[in-house]
Length: 213
Image 1 (cartoon, rainbow, N blue to C red):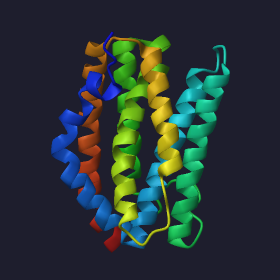
Image 2 (image 1 turned 180 degrees about the horizontal axis):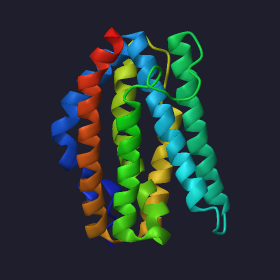
Image 3 (image 1 turned 90 degrees about the vertical axis):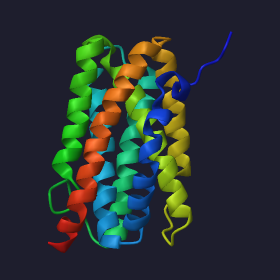
Image 4 (image 1 turned 120 degrees about the vertical axis):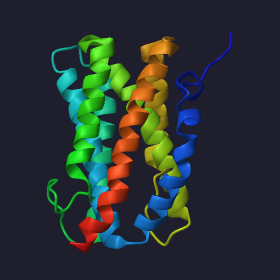
């Protein structure tokens, strides 16, 4: 039996190859600018928080397994990790998430909300938790691996290695949960890529204006 990885089954890396240069360029710039970096980190904290909340709300009336609780706890811890580092870089508290302390707050929240709604429309409410988590984990692993590479070349002390290990494990678990429906996986990954590219475009456009303000 041929073992297929989530990357191969989704076509995600091939479909996103054209965006690697843009993303790496942005990350290289933002990491070296502390005010920008703090806002970016706080945005990541918000997205991780939205992910943990999605797990909690979607599984509230279901049998909560140890694995699901672990996933929830780790996503919440990722939100804390990014919030703590955002405040370390900023040098002061960044309470909550608002337009003054979070890069592209509204576009980022819309990205997550539209992805959640779009996936739920395709797979149904009962299956949404697994599929949303799978698609998000693909993006998180793709982005955070590049981010770690940029951090290693910078003066910042932050490391994503332990976080990446957990995200990679989540990816494998969600891929197993969703089974071998590769056609649906490719369709949903393409949907996420479209939404991600729109969000990244907003980051590239709005970041200099936000910092200048």
